Image (tube, rainbow, N blue to C red; front, side):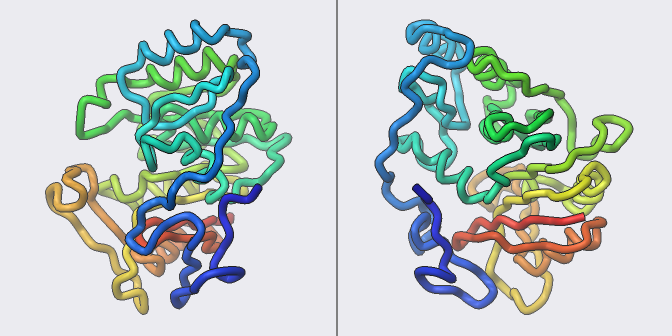
Length: 273
């Protein structure tokens, strides 16, 4: 089942934007959940249901909804806390290659590792997850605890490094066929520098998801937030429009961009080397 159908097929297109009518309402919130049946069998580790539940409970805050087997999904906060199917729809939104066999993948700002584990599930040869745990609340103190628990239960080979996006280079992490840069851009004081670092480690394609604005889209513009004006979060610094994101991507060293989809406030763009 496809959870996302683009407006060019159904719904209303707004100018250059493809609005995902089947995913978000007009105010940018997720639509009511669709039927969702999580993985019922045991995880790859063979852990029993009681062990899985106990290990998940050891982590006080989960950001991602991750399927752990036995019909259990971590109590994530991304999207809708009451809808464990949120993560599947978000994965579908990214339009990741269905088969990543032989490909290397870098997931920047991986948090609990949802998208890293998904890349591995799609047969990526190597996946590296990175995060610097720069949060504005108590979640910062948890570090990689959620990722570590998920990796253990899923018996995953995904690697993890605590690393800032500004530290990325071919010398520090190597280069990757596919780079995931999801929900990070607008949290950065220096987004163009970050995109330059990302371009330096990307061999084929980066998938970039970000908060964005539809204001002044006839020219590249970004809104700057000095304090916590956006969502009461002092780590939200810049919200660019689509033209600005695409211009920054090209300026950073990517050859071309492809607009994948957007809601009224979020956008997905592919960047190609």
